Picture 1 (cartoon, rainbow, N blue to C red):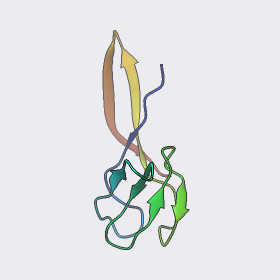
Picture 2 (picture 1 turned 30 degrees about the vertical axis):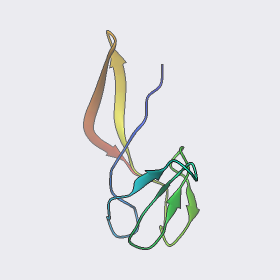
Picture 3 (picture 1 turned 45 degrees about the vertical axis):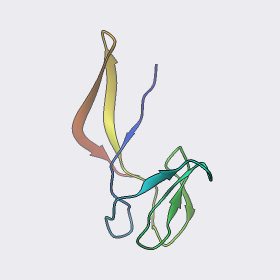
Length: 71
């Protein structure tokens, strides 16, 4: 089982983005950067994909590390 946990900050200027259920992508309200569910940039000005936390599932529990993998 693979679970992904993205950093809650846009890679452009660090604004908090949200999921747009109608469009089916993450959108940053500050400068309209858009990201796929895989964290890939769909529209700029974000310079790179979303950063991810290191995760693992252990005994049915999701563990989210403090280390971030840069997108």
